[in-house]
Image 1 (tube, rainbow, N blue to C red):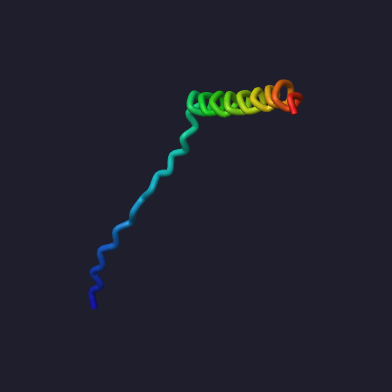
Image 2 (tube, rainbow, N blue to C red):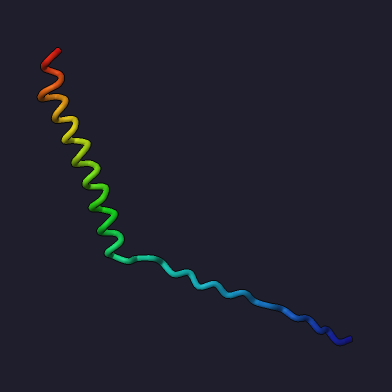
Length: 52
């Protein structure tokens, strides 16, 4: 008895994206969001809330 089997093996190569320029750009973007948020809070506390 002859066993003829065709077995295909799928190979996957996973590459991690570790582009440091994209990481830095994302960090700068979110840091800017945080700075704007705290700036807005500071403005509210210093100028708007004392009016009440």
